[in-house]
Length: 390
Image 1 (tube, helix red, strand yellow):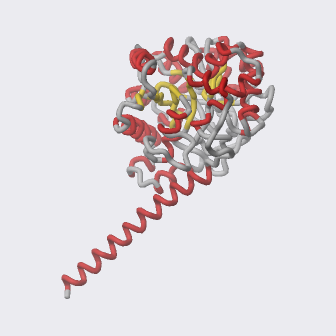
Image 2 (image 1 turned 90 degrees about the vertical axis):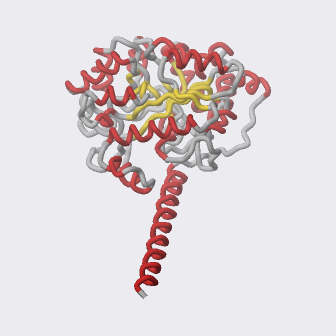
Image 3 (image 1 turned 180 degrees about the vertical axis):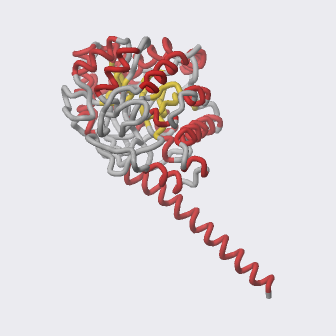
C-alpha cells in the first residue's frame, strides 16, 4: 500500500511539474507575442534596383533586445522580430544584441522610478537560474552566455564579435559567405549592481557597448525618462573612463540631457546612440535635439535611427527614411545609422528580413548608393573597426 501511495505521489508531482513547465513556457512566449507585434508581415517585396543594391550592402543594426526572450536564435520564430534565419534573409551582416536587465512597471518615456522590476517576473516565467532573480549583473551574464551558446549551435553562421581581429576576420569571410556577426551591448549600467569592477566582468563576457541609464535614474547617471534626470554620478564618471580604457563604446540611448552633457565633457573616444529618434521629425521626450545630434557627431560617433512610432512618428520605412534624411542633412552622412529596437517591446513595422524596405525608402529620399551604403551599415563598421579592442 505504501509503495502504491509513493507511486501516486510521484505521478502527481510529475504532473504538477509538467504543468508548471508548460504554463511558464507558454506565459513567456505569450508575453513576447503581445509586447512585440508586427504591422507588415512577410512576404516583403521591393523594386529590382533596391533589392540588388541591398544585397550588395554591409547592413548593420545597432539595437535589438532579442536575448531577453529566451528563444533559440537559430530557429525561425513566427513571433520574433529577429532571429538568425530572418537576419540572413534580410542580408543583415551585423546585429547588436542589447541586454535588458531591469525595467519599471508602467514604463513610459516621461517619468519612471526604479522601485519595480518587470524582468524579475520574466526571469521567473522563463525558469532562469535563481541567482538571476536578485542580481542584475547575473542577468546580463546569463544573456551573454545565451548568445555564445546560440552561436556555437549555428554551424558557423552566427559569430560573436569581441575585437578588431574578430571583426576583420568576419568581414573577410563575409565576402564569400552569408553569415551574421553579433555584438553584445547593455541597456543601462544599473547592470553593474553598483560595482565599478563589474565593468571588467561584463567586458570579459563579451560586452562591447553600454549605456549609462535606461528607463530610470540609477547610481551611474540620470535617464531621460527618470524622475530627477540628473547627470553622471562620481561612480558614473569612473564607469565611463573604465569603459573607454577597455574599448567599450559608450551608448547615450535613453540618457538624460544632463548625462549626455556630462559624458561628452569627459569622453575621449567616439560615443554612439544605439537607437533613437530626432526631435526634428518627431518631437518628444524620447528623442534627441539638433544640438545633441551635433555634439555626438563631433566625437566621431554614430546615431542609430529607430524603427518604432515614438522614434519616427510613423509606422513604415518611409518614416524611418525621413528621420534619416533630416539627421544626415544636419550632421552629415558619416554619422547616421540604423537602430531598430527590434524585439524591444515595440510595435515594429516589419521584421529583420525586410531591411531592404529601408534601402528602398532611402532611394526614395534621393540618397546615392554610396550614401546608402554608409547609413545601412558602413558607418557602424567604421566606428567598430576603429574602436573595438585589439
